[in-house]
Length: 420
Image 1 (cartoon, rainbow, N blue to C red):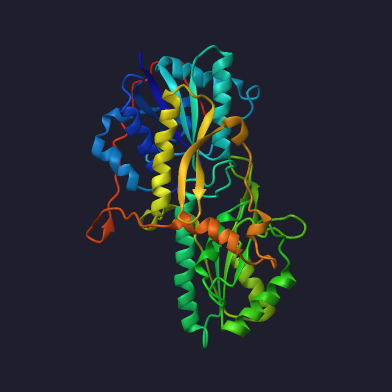
Image 2 (tube, one colour; image 1 turned 90 degrees about the horizontal axis):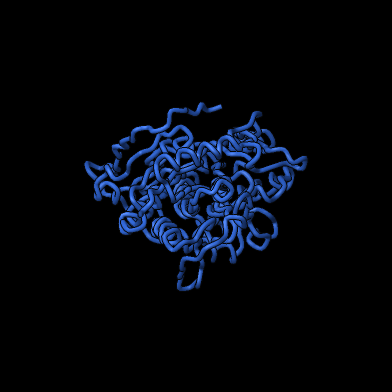
């Protein structure tokens, strides 16, 4: 008899995470002999804990297909980290209790490193409790820091947004630099890995092109060296454009933008590093500045998504279901690059045990010798990931996105779960 599937979205959403959801749901509908209904967790794993499940069979084929061009998380996401099996035993047992009640035999969790860790732990607790549950992770993270997979869905579109934005803003600054602003600082995401910041470097095709400086989390910030580089750019090109990662640290290992406090995953809460860097330039060099924080704009910009990214996000959602119905457990589909020029790729897979909680940092050979730019090897890696346009449909000048009905199913358990 077919078993039902559970699908949930986790962590920061992206321009293409719904394309993965589309791949999961459409492919599951093609396997009625193995998979009954696909239930989505409302607000991620919280939906499973609270038995708040969405019946995706209530959505039309057309609306599910429209997820492919809709940004954000259609079913709601969350920042909620399940800890170790013993430490959070009651929560894992609650999940199995809910899965039993709703005849769920497949678990698809769409997220980054923490989410892959959760998928792995659920496969373990299912085995320990004698409840058969097939767990397959679906990769997603704008930070591009999951190991084994060549790249992560969500990153290519953010990379495209950052490269386009720094190029366009720099044209603006260059046109005004003689009598006005000479410094532009754009802050991008990236707590520990500088992949998004590096993407800004794609915009510079020849000597003197912006961005003139990239600040990576992997490179310790040296104020004296940085200010000398800024001054040189202004005196040479008339202005200086800078891309800075939110995770840049000083010699003491402190984030330049540390605001104090922790987020739900226990990570340091970061404030804005762009104004810190801009004010530093003003105080020491006297140049007039403007700064911008890309923030949610960079990960929500479906209107300028990379076609490559959209195709890979969908393919990985599809592959997750195909792996599951083939009997694979505790795995995650991956992107395998087979050629740089022409760019070609295929689907592979990795064990969740090898993916969970492992961060892929920028390789040293991808960062220029002076620490302020990218190398040709980095450009060769990044360039294919931003290729192609995949515009959503437009109406009256605005992109048209789908909003699902998200019909909940009746609860079956007498017990409830209270979020702590």
